[in-house]
Image 1 (cartoon, rainbow, N blue to C red):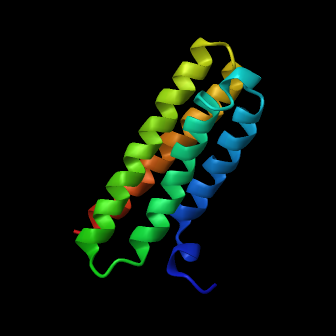
Image 2: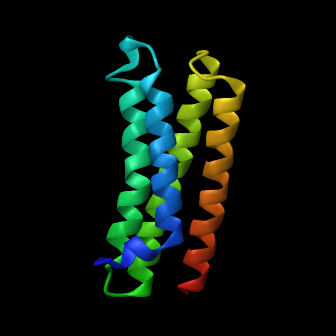
Length: 117
């Protein structure tokens, strides 16, 4: 593996959540294509992208800053999940799976962020 982020378990978990969000949002109604579907996908993409970008930082504080952005993006995904659930775009099982993965990912990112201090 050529890049540092490829070996990070937190990045791999972010990619797993990204895959799940893409799968879930593919079933959203067509009228959500440029709204909620786009928003939740961009937020999920941002998680992995910020972890990757931050891992190449010149300093631990800079990496921690990017991890903070990743956490914010996870929170955005979770909020979009709640919106989708309220609009009946998700089953209880889909919501719970994505919510659990998001919760686990935030804990992992926060732990990594603490270790950088």
